Length: 389
Image 1 (cartoon, rainbow, N blue to C red):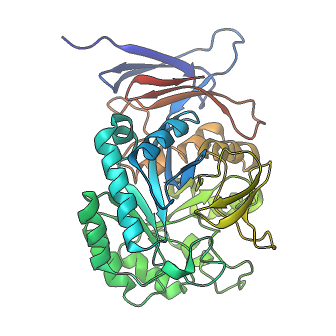
Image 2 (cartoon, rainbow, N blue to C red):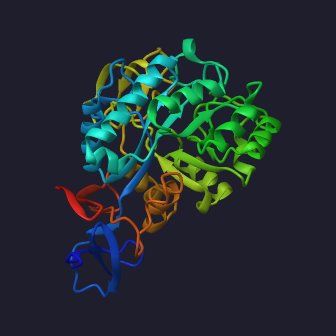
């Protein structure tokens, strides 16, 4: 006998009418659209958010020296409260032993905790083959930046059960093309980021299989040549989709709007790049990403190097990026949501679609069109309510 259907309702971000989703056995079984009744408040209903770049949040640190599976589990719980139903734990440049230890911890967390297994389809390794130059290197430690090594990647996969799904690298290194080909053949997605590559090197990387730009517009020199830089060839190449950090600090709204127009919404997505400092009180912190950092009340997170120029990851959840896109960048709310659901879902097993037959990962939230961070009121993971505000 089939299970009884669960009925989930909310306001449709596309037209403001009522959206009714019926769920059976964790899957969307039916979707109905009904006229809005009266002048009831808008409780927006959407697919759950998908974040391809999470370094930590609310004190739970993925890049610390001794990551335990329980930390991954608590991090998953923390992210649910801001509407995230799928995320990729992200490890920045580190020694091979630390990267493997982190990957093994996530693998154990997926084995021990059903919540982690449901929310984490794979892992994002950001580095270690990025540019060693200050600026493009960002908050990554110079001591562990190194050339791409296919054998090291295979050791990552052997230790984690093929858990690495995205690798961010700079294609300026000799040997980048065969590295990209090998990882692509092994099923990993190559993203370009923290790079000083030339236009020719970027083009060769795309031809070899690179498919994504990581937080485009960041991880670069503070000042770039107006013609010859790594930004324009990535924006212009239709073989690359691009992720952006839309927290209002990493990119100005005007710059982000121009980049979205150049790349096109179909090839654009947002990430949080949030670190363990995200969601914490303003102040000075010692962090695994960036070392000594300063968190401002508005979520601006910088390295404490006396300049205030270089960001140390982000401090706002990805739903804040949805608000930025809809409030400051000219997108409709449903378009902004697609950049945090359907589009990143292409690199997370096809998740993020709100359609019959899809996983019933949903969130309901309140937003007045002004607040910097919308308020998530309920979250469902495979049809089960896992958060209620």
